[in-house]
Image 1: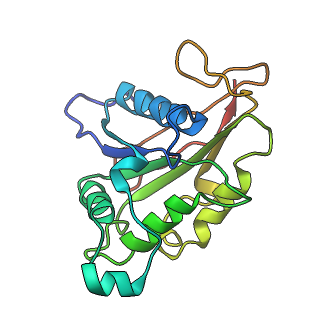
Image 2: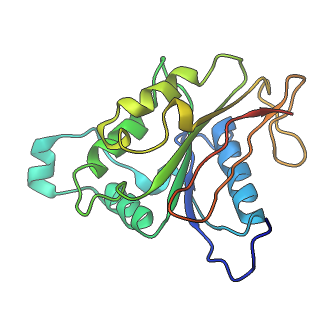
Image 3: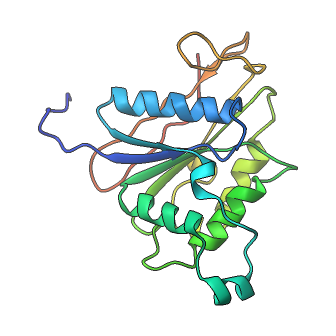
Length: 195
């Protein structure tokens, strides 16, 4: 069924958990933003640089409060209906920076993850890369109540570090990521499909 132009658009916060400009996951974030915008969604494309935080430290929180990076994520999440985080795998888990950001953001009120649905994705030049980082996501306390674990995870792999002219993953074993955001009470991400 075609959606009418009077349907409200979703606002989606998208940011790569990689800080490297040339990261495949940063490129995947740009691709997810392009797909969401093509479906009429309002996209807030951010960078991990927008959300700089130190390692969580309760003593530091007691002295200085919540760092500006976690406050910025809180504001942007509260303004969004959903979030998408393309994230690399570091040492068989999620990047430390993403974990620290979740740790700090879990301390703010109102809790910005509540009521939002998320999609965690990964791009890797190898067939196995990214998987363990995606599996680490549901172990985060703030993620347990939200989609984003194995059923809400998408992996783009086999691109061997290349991106095609259209901004999508490239390579002989190309897989593409299709982001499907539906209007209504829930937002769902579609799994990777062979292209």
